[in-house]
Image 1 (cartoon, one colour):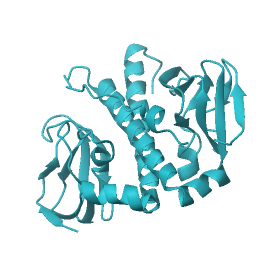
Image 2 (image 1 turned 30 degrees about the horizontal axis):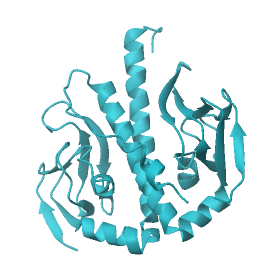
Image 3 (image 1 turned 120 degrees about the vertical axis):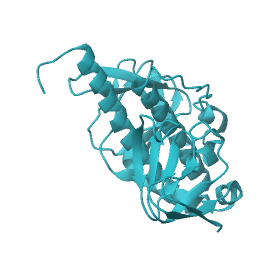
Image 4 (image 1 turned 180 degrees about the vertical axis):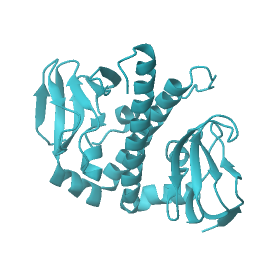
Length: 131
Length: 142
């Protein structure tokens, strides 16, 4: 697999851009954030470590990047190309079943964030005692 | 599909948030609502699911309790997939795994989009993304 290296604070991809590959972390930590600018206000969706996969959504559904990824430290990543993924979908989809757990985990995580967000806005709208 | 269909009537609770997960459902006909509760017990509709869409699969994948409440919005017929059948399909049926991955990705994208909307109405996100919720309508499990 092709390897790429990123330095601390390098952008790996930006929300809204077309996605042409997914990544697996060999070394380093990656932050996934909502928003396009790491210096602007943003919401951290996840901090990922070695062996984590990210950027797979755009490969799976061929939509644009749903979030921004940047390096929290110097890191080395393995690149998963659409060709690899499509090959696996066609020939060996069962090998992709670990992705199911990853997706569910992220879905729960973002659902929790959404709930917190809604809760915060409800608290703004209806002051409900002290917390 | 050669599975037996279970019918839920309009207004029926199919399952409640926080309950143990023991089966997944694929809608054969009808419409259900996915509801989540905030800490004050206010229930809000998150999305609607129709024909050929699946729900209840998350808890079978990670064994955590139900993340939402599902209520039938119309009389709805579902194929019920219990845990052992689900495990069998994810182990031996590549097409099922592919459909699951795509459906979860679509749900994740929807949730992230909602999260952005909830977080920053002030930001102008150029998000004209087409929803893939009709994925299963086109490529549902046969």
